[in-house]
Amino acid sequence: MNLDQYLPVLLFILVGIVVGILPQALGYILGPNRPDPAKNSPYECGFEAFEDARMKFDVRYYLVAILFILFDLEIAFLFPWAVVLKDVGAIGFWAAMVFLTILVVGFIYEWKKGALDWE
Image (cartoon, rainbow, N blue to C red; front, side, top):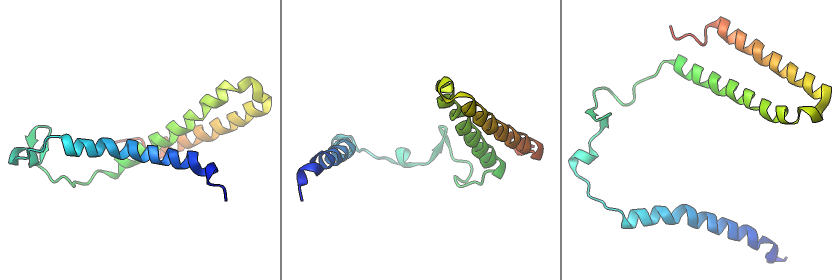
């Protein structure tokens, strides 16, 4: 078994570990560490905490966030398609139109269900 083939991979892993750990270790060793009660106290925007940090968010917040990510990623798929539009021809164009139709139908469905309303 020839280990020369694995040398670039092992070197890449070693450099990645060094670049990832060395700055953290240097910061921990060389950085100042002077804790006091004011630094260790919990705060919220410069004020004392007035609520529990583990308060529950409304589920609609997560729903809107997930829907934003979903539609945002689907729209991001249109950029590569737009770049190669001349190369893919009519089949690629109509495939993208089907994709956009499904996207718009899903968006209208979510809109009608009230998933984008806050109240």
